[in-house]
Length: 113
Length: 114
Image (tube, rainbow over all chains, first blue to last red; front, side):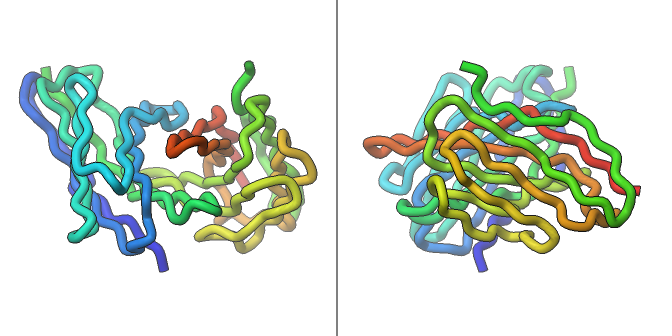
């Protein structure tokens, strides 16, 4: 069945350092890979995404890379700030004619001032 | 636009009771989904719909029913509540157009089954 793995489960970095979260997916039909940030008690919010025909995408301090051959993708946050502390989820969307989005288990990121 | 709305925000049920979690979106999105999120875990897909009249099972469908009679509404029914269904439930709607895709989440319903 479809599966998304995510590592590490917890990550603690000093303010200003970089943070990297890695995900792998099982279904080669996956074509869209969003990343969500969830603060305590709130809904997930999309922060960046990448499509299967793109290898890398950047948005200010956030970047995502995709390796389709290896079926893995990563989130990179540079110059981390305390407000980056949250749980981050990767996900993979399967297919185009249907809408099945499978999430990884999440990474709890703590940025220490 | 209100986006994706969910009611109720909180609910306590006794084991064996049934109830319906409501979800509505006013963005005319084709796709809608239901997820559950347990403490310290990711979101697990319960059911999803690609349009009115079309639904399909996700990763954890047992104990839940859905229907999609209109584009706007996608209610989730718990047939006979069990303590294992204690969770936060998120509804989402999404669209795809010209290669673009985006998914929007509702605020969630926190359900406790005693």
